[in-house]
Image 1 (cartoon, rainbow, N blue to C red):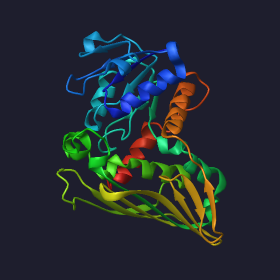
Image 2 (image 1 turned 60 degrees about the horizontal axis):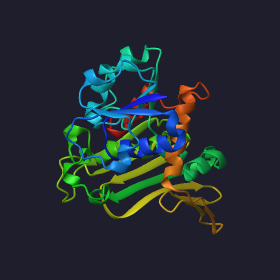
Image 3 (image 1 turned 180 degrees about the vertical axis):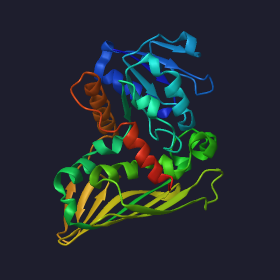
Image 4 (image 1 turned 45 degrees about the vertical axis):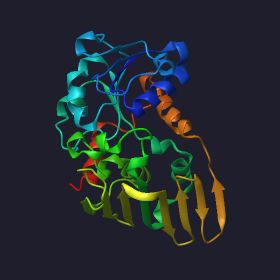
Length: 306
């Protein structure tokens, strides 16, 4: 298999390393870089077939093309390279607003898979398979963490997350939460939101987003922020029989009334690899694309408060 990565940030490096672990010598990886990123160390370089710095140096066709450059560049990158592959893996968030014109893209006989890795965690899979959401009256979710700690060794002020014009901001950076909510219970009937900048972080993007969503049979509350000094990522479900707290950081399901805990510990790469294997299965016709451009843009519009 021959693939190309456009952009070589931290998530691209993780995907490349994992792809090599899955496929070994059966995959060849080209990388298109802007030339402004971090240098490539010798050990990681062994995963890459070649690095190029202009479109003209790329091959005409790849089995898959990974769009892993800054969010603000995804839409134009996809349009520019639409003829280089039939299978596209687009890192989240898919675009900047979700209101981009995708009519010309979705009419192409191609696969556009948008990253949604938290779906593949043991915790979210447990909720999907074991919880009857028709019996959930209310759902409360939170993702709180400290942006300067996200990428060790990198100045957070120079990352895309810190800059609105690069597609940064907690409302779309933490689109994972709305993605798994949509995956578990579908789209809300209406959403109210507050999206703002409140902390002392040296960024020009939003650092807090709060949502209240109405469903036919339940409500959802969601809190996202960049400034929490203790990382929290929880889903709380309020039912007639129990209150269930799903902890994505510590990877546990806690039944609070029954005083029962289920440990679902896994390494981070496990769910990242699951997602890549799913994408490979899509390429090989063994699975269907379950998060396409339409779905990803719908979720993105919710996160932006549209």
